[in-house]
Amino acid sequence: MSQPANQFELSSPPEDVISSLTFSPNNPSRLLVSSWDKNVHLYDTNAGLNGSKLTAFPHAASVLDCCFGETDGSVFSAGLDWQVQQLDPETGKGNTLATHESAVKSICYNTETKSLLSGSWDQSIKQIDPRSPESTGSHAQPHKIFSLSTISHKLVVAMSSRSVYLYDLRNMSSPWQRRESSLKFMTRTVRCMPNAQGYASSSIEGRVAVEFFDPSDESQKRKYAFKCHRSTEGGVDVIYPVNALAFHPIYGTFASGGGDGVVSLWDGMAKRRLRQYQRYPASIAGLSFSNNGKHLAIGTSSGFEDGNDDGVCPPESVKIIVRELQEGEGKGKGQS
Image 1 (tube, rainbow, N blue to C red):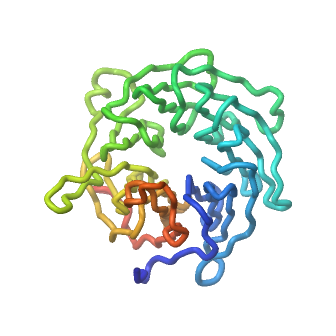
Image 2 (cartoon, rainbow, N blue to C red):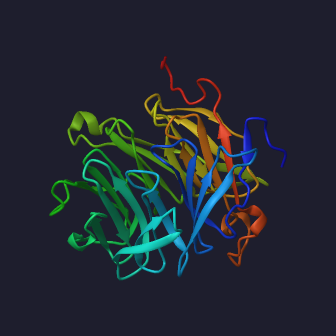
Image 3 (cartoon, one colour):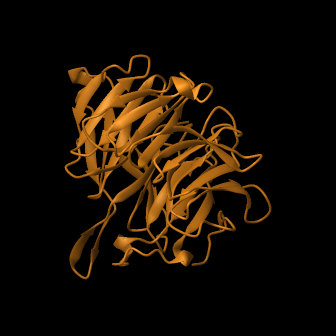
């Protein structure tokens, strides 16, 4: 596939399926990528023509998620080895902060409380202070955790059985709100709005929901869900999972990425699609905007939705594309 002039592929991508990718909240050219190749990869997207891999952190098993902490030197990972680790970019080594009783599916760092949150298939959340991990708190949940997202003092926990819990991180003894997902099928991912007013979630059945934290009836009337990442192929309607969501840090619009290899930009407040990029040759596995909102990182990896019945991912399908957004490309309706 020929590359548009405003995007490029990073050199030295992972060797297996990308599980997550995230730009640093402090540095617009630091990108962290976790993979089923049992590594977390750290890139400088601004080095040379195709970026540069700064280091890779080896793990004992496939890595399912990664995130930055307070600084670029504070990096965390979790995965199939049941462990939550803090990684040192200087040495490339890891330090175990906590251990679950099953795979750890999702982690996120909260700047307000300076704590790391981990969600596991063991039906628990751990709240970890990386400075004193011995004080880790563990909180039982009713179902497997699929995705976590945090903003301000809020934590959104998306679980199996279409269960969504909202927590106030200052009091984790019980959920602030218990909700049922607006989506009828399994939740794939959840992401909080930058303005801390609500969150978006996506499902395996080609839908995205936009919801708000305020429990008042007036606010709850604003929530909605819509169909996306669907196509008609050979006269048959094909529905793809929506694997990834990412909010623009400045405009509050969001991107979605699906198993159809398509990335779309949405204005959640105006309820409309802003644009759809050209179809990538493999399923979209992860999305992240840089902290200045000028770049969008797109991770692709082939999977079952690409016709690989054995689940084996062709290495050539694993790519990290960095797209430079044009002036106003992520702006919503009526934004100056």
